[in-house]
Length: 421
Ligand code: LLP
Image (cartoon, rainbow, N blue to C red; front, side, top):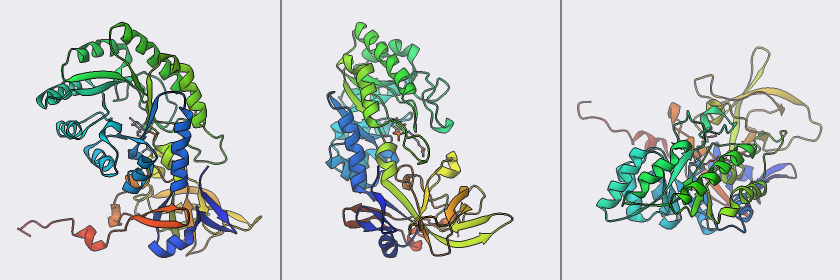
């Protein structure tokens, strides 16, 4: 459920008309709903009620400072994967002891930054990383709290580019080798083992792969405890999917997920950590764009809009489906027609949808891409020298620009000319 609904035929974000925001900031733009962000965070938080837990928002999904602050004030921790994300989390007021550091390639300077600023734990992904972490921590007279990310070799049944839990993926340590690697970790004085980490992929629409992975984690917890390790925390990653296509069966809800976690892991008495990104931010955002031209091609009509693949890359990159709706609702029973909805970028990959049924649209009409709050703005680029598009946050009847559109001068002046030119 989100807070983007039609009122008297006009699309609103909470109590603000999308057309009003468009008039104020120009198109294209992203708009996020505070109420939806908080609702989704709370859905997870409530789903894990009864277990000691922390929801660490995977901020790679949407790391705007205002989004982070909204969630941090509600009590969220953060899952970060780079120095930049760590500093963004800190800047949004998240204390170090609520920040988890994930990622396969943490550098020495990133490790140092987090040890200096405070960290809940590092999720270690390889033996070489573990050795570096131990050395850096010792050189700073610190002890780094760690989990080791295990790769459970489970098929997440999602898009190949976002599946991470199979043995051929670059992530984690094969679960079969986990006991040996934990033994090595326990012998390193710069490290304190606190638990186990697992993350098998993103946009999962079925609980079965999660359950298979978590059963393996439960078994491993018992083995490691028997080996003498303290396993008091289980980081279960993110990955629960969202309904991109409203006509499809909805993925399981956080409550279903929470019940499954309780069933598979509850008896272990561990603190549970989860790292949802998409489910918190995805349906809390729209990308709004204007129709520039309607062009009739051979046997098809193209809706050429001012948003492009550089603004929202998911369709080009993952063949992702996004619902696209008119900002002025079509009258009931109005005729629909198929359109290819495309951006202005010079490649055929700049196609958002093919033969999508839409009400008849004309130049100047606004359309909204649903489910664009996660992996939208954060993956945008300036390809074709198109400036990054602004982000807007709505809160009840208020809205604020939370990242403005840069001027073309700002964009151009980031480049510098060598002296010989
Ligand atoms: N934890 C770890 C270690 C992750 O790698 C990820 C996502 C998450 C948590 C959050 O997963 P979520 O709850 O958002 O599914 N750009 C792609 C998605 C990439 C996901 C990468 N890792 C997309 O647009 O679909």
